[in-house]
Length: 479
Image (tube, rainbow, N blue to C red; front, side):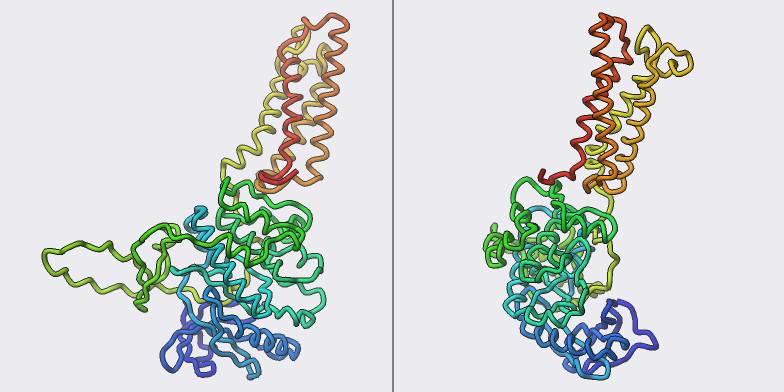
């Protein structure tokens, strides 16, 4: 949290402001205190939006709809003034860690934690949809992690289902990499839209990246609309429901009540509680990965009970002040690249590039080793004694392999685009046919024994090239 700037207001409505929590496309968010001392997050709308009558109408409708959301896993709207000189909205302040920051700092989550996260988010969506809302922008930065469960925040751009006509024509509400296909194609937005986003968020929590890889907003939107998600990094069991959530057809996605039932958390036994300081509220954080639970603002793990102490326990040390916490408020505007869309793990890069490097290595050896009559194909260019056309073919194949490698190193978790697939496939097929023709005439002429190791290495490179064409699809993508 930052301190107030000289130009910031000191009070909004009845709430005294204490500092800045962040900023977004709609306005700036402050930490405030009510007259009784309760902490709230106050979102103050930007002046240029406040002067737009159309925006005020939409904002008032969204505030009225958001007040109806009362689910446990959502941040409640406690006060608002959509008609004032500077419209504002106040929500309950929840000390928590945004999901994108938790995954970026501590890595992907285990299956048990992801399922518990999904159960909480599904309950939050159930409450949102029962109020007649569609969130439209469920993403990792809009999920706050608290000891007793996640909280879905940022209803600033959620629009009541019956009021979608108020949205500006051509306006796309959402974040690249976490939007549903219907948001991109202009089809009706329904609760199933949030189910798709839930599948993308759970994929991010389990793998550290979204299900549609990395790249520009245009590339991500194209993959969402026309390509299958990359689910190769998901664990083999326990999260099969994610693939159903990411179905292109909204009718094929599971309903939210079915998700709540599927992801229901079953207690695994007694666990020491977690105390929230300074509220002294007992909750369980055992659903979280250990490092994330320890990193939560203002949380400590209670010690295990000691049986029959011989003497009265020593006074507990004074707890340190809680660390500055993030608010259950809309996250600041982010770039078009989805959260966590960083380079894929080294194992994935090696697995997808291995065939292309092998093909290049085999072809290079094939043209420098003796191929026929003791002469190498490479020296045949100047001496006229070797099959020099194979040098040209090898060079072209190496170039297409290099093209695909450049694409994979740039986006290792994404499919290879057509402009790189086509030349590599054509050269691989042509090279295989050329070697088959070359070998056929040596068999007919009875000169197979005159072929050297270079020629046979070139022949070995052909199946390697053909095999490499099967590595175009992203891991886990259905044929």
